[in-house]
Amino acid sequence: MAGADTTPAVSEQDDEELFEEIASSHLRWDLDLSGGTSPSADRWWLGDTWTVGCRIGPMRGRRRAPELRRNPGEYVGVLMVHHGTEIFSQQGTTATITPGTAALWDGVRPVDCATGGHLVKHTMFVPREALAREVPDLDAVFVRTLPASDTLQLLRGWLNVARGQAVLDPEAARTAERMAVDLLVAAIDRARDGSRGTQAVLRAQVKAFLDDHLDDPDLTLDTVARATAISLRYLHLLFEGTGETAREYLRHRRLERAHDILLRHGDLVSVAEVARRCGFDNPSSFSRAYRSRYGRSPREARHEAPVLL
Image 1 (tube, rainbow, N blue to C red):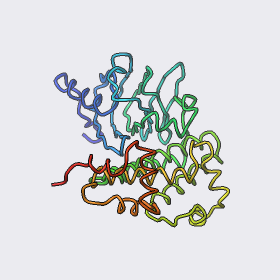
Image 2 (cartoon, helix red, strand yellow):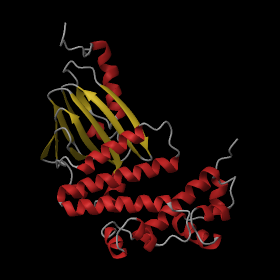
Image 3 (cartoon, helix red, strand yellow):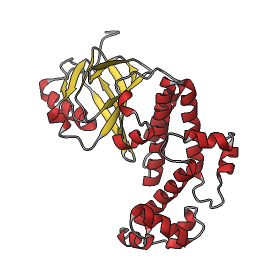
């Protein structure tokens, strides 16, 4: 019959399997899926962050002590709705998330959610510590609706692009993760103050340029400012309140890349070659910086690298 609802109903025998599919892809929830619609979910990873695409019918859910005890770590959930409406309540605050909008919820505190109809959404799970570095007053952001914006649209688009990649190596995955977090921070800033949102987008562009030129030992912040069409003074301003300067960001990203190379390919490359690939002037300065950050020398880290057969 034309117009008939062809969505498969949830049978008793499938209920437990469907519940486990949803519960294991997200953080653990106590869910009531008695609405009669068969849910589906798929998950993909970007570094330490993962995203779940979900389609689900009417449902109610909650996270209490039994579910919180099963957390794999401390995460922030970022709910982005594409179709339908979901209501979240946490710590006495309620947010209604409609298509194009989003909201953050704290994965280490009790929370309730509900939807009265068919829902299509993405939920991104970001390590709490990583997001708190970018948003120092993180508690003030939870369960506050982020209005629809170009920045949120960019975030959704970026997650879909990352999802379409077959396999990302660890360095590429971490870069994609940083871009996603930067866009999320930009959306948060945009919701608070339009000018701050613009700054966050520009900061994301600067970080992307730095990440693309980590191997250039002659890279200067003047060069970065010119390449991103901003003044050097404004470049420094973009990093105020983030916990690190632009120069510190460049240094820690070079060390992160060097650390990844040493642990994955340390048996194939020399310390001098790693230093060169990561933009350090000489192996000695690289070794001092690496030891200061990781508590051991690059040579010692090479010995920890797995043997590639």
